[in-house]
Image (cartoon, rainbow, N blue to C red; front, side):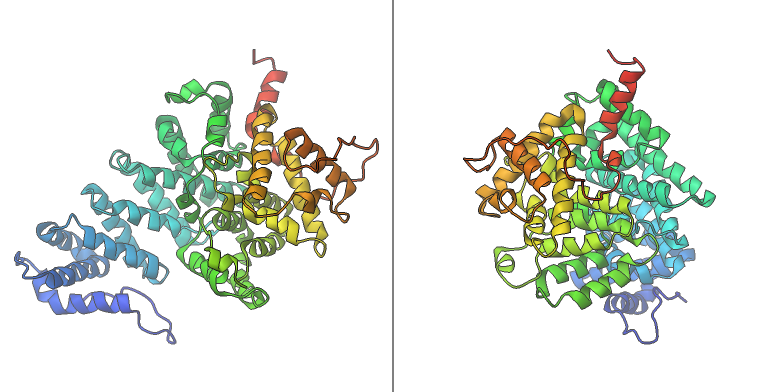
Length: 507
């Protein structure tokens, strides 16, 4: 007799997907034993047979190989239907699956990779999304380890699915930052080494694929510069890019200019989290959001290590959730307000700093020819609409942006100046703000910050008032607002170069 597929609490209604699979299994169980009837009369019977076989694979581990032989014998669509059912199970039921079913899910996924099933790339991406950052529970670490092993064991097959490999790299670079920063448990050492092995192997051997991630690859790598293996990669990126044997790759600035596709930002947002965020940003009226935010925080942010996900949510909101004009013009809570709330959820200065970096990241390299103004709109509106009631937030954000311009990558500062200048100009041209006077002529803005902003805009010829003249920085400027240690905002590329220069290792 087959075991149960999922665990349900007494108060939970029966799941329709699980019921449909179980009913198909019970209806066709006599046909699931050899010798198999290989004739299928109609598409409906084919669907039911796929459902029954899948339920058998997941709930009868001792007969899984027999069920798979049956599937191989009757498949007529390149496993497309079977894979679509697997994806539904991962997205809708994974958290409720019994442990034996989770084991079987990984096993059958490997089988699908071996036969190059249609849709296996989507299945792997869905599984990656089930790994929760900074969650050190046994089940979560198990899934993390199993998938890392899968990617290494099926390396040659999966290289034919470049989006899957780059998605895995994005995921594991992000997970490694949490695993290395938040846990000193020796039990994690084996997993961290496995993650490092996969990431370094892909970066060293298939760098041309890694480039497809774009500029956020640099953002992820800078969080790992303290890990020896990645420090060596940084050294080569800065001093010897030819080591990556990728035609046309000459400098990290080429990655800066490559926008990261929105699909990558979904990877660190679980399907449940995505559903709740899209509901908040599409259906909840501004002024009525507090109870929804409280529920979201309790569910996702207040657990140990929960604030690490804020950076991922900020990137998701900026780059993957672009509301329609109808929503923008309605009374639905705007993106900038949700991001402002998220920043208040960061209890540690480090997480607040990386969240602000995520908010401004596309500003640093903005090019109106390839970048979307919707990616930079939330930061601008958050600064503008926080005045005057939340002036400290406007001060903090504007100062952070100006510090990024000066310190993020000193060796490539001209690129960043051009990017931020272009961002400001595009925000005015597209009507996000009518004029930059809202900042440059704001009396409640810190005089020191206002002068720095005016000088920056004058130097880049962006939106400065015509009668505005350069202003000198006072001999004793007012103290900067309290901000996290900005040394973390300098890319390892720049700091590594300075260290090497000091040692006389550069020309």
